[in-house]
Length: 419
Image (tube, rainbow, N blue to C red; front, side, top):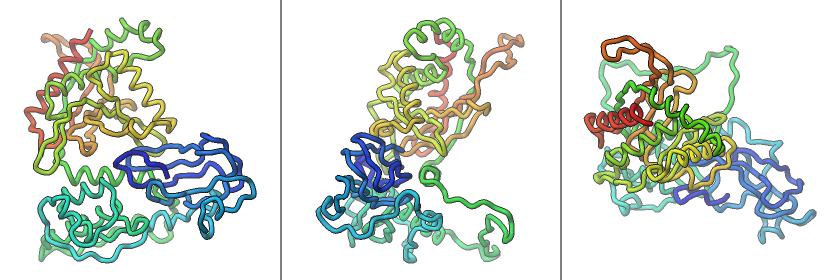
């Protein structure tokens, strides 16, 4: 399992592209993985024959773990690894059952402590030291959790993100006061006995998105503000520069103008380009825009770095490049890290506007509604203009409404006066 970035401690095998006994070439796609940050096809590190698969599809393993063995045809696996490996995991034709995917080992019941304050790095590890990723340790530090109190279900007792989120859910449930008149609420089953249903395991990508969204809602105080923006100037600029951009091999889209407007406004309002770390504010000096891209079964957010330093042509080219490679699962690990502000586009299918969830640890996200011609009043006269709603979701723990609206006013002014 390759190291896919500093903050990534484990990866999940999504599928093997080769079976045991198949010949493989060096750099040929061998298996596909999913992590908290990126999905990627992993190339074979050497040519030979796939002698063994040691990590099954759906299995999550730490980085740098051996997941398979490549060697010469007929070579013994024990000789290839230097030590006995035991029985090899089933090949791709024998995937893990849906029960194994849906039902991870159940952690023992936790003794739920009262809600503590944010811990220091030393307090996070008071008592028994448990293996955990940087993301888990940050959640523990921010939520005041001693990692030693959390039972890990990962390899070797590693505390996974799911483990700590379940621990927080239990602690929150125990902390909520019980109403004496409230009847006990039981879980409503998703289907009734005998009801015709088709049950499938949640995909790795979908599960990680779900965990990230719940974590964001739990962490940030979400507030949204909506601006109605005239895109007539953008459309005129696109028409005027269409040939220039086509000659460069790219299509000039409204997204490039929106990204440029955000980069300019973020430089004027650095609090929107910051992060909250406990009782401190981390101001990011680089403006790195995350561009949400829909992929099969989920969403990924590749990052365009130093967006404020790029020309409109460079910005257009960069957005088109990362979006195309995201859909082909060809992104590099560092291309989904270090984003400081995210733009998502629910309007591409006709949505008037959306209320996006903040991409942690950022403090703001822009949602772009559908861009279309509408009847509007200009100078006391009814006219038709190309319009769209832009929605800013921001973390009210750090960003006040006046600041958020000032940022959006700058974005609106830039788009309505661009040439």
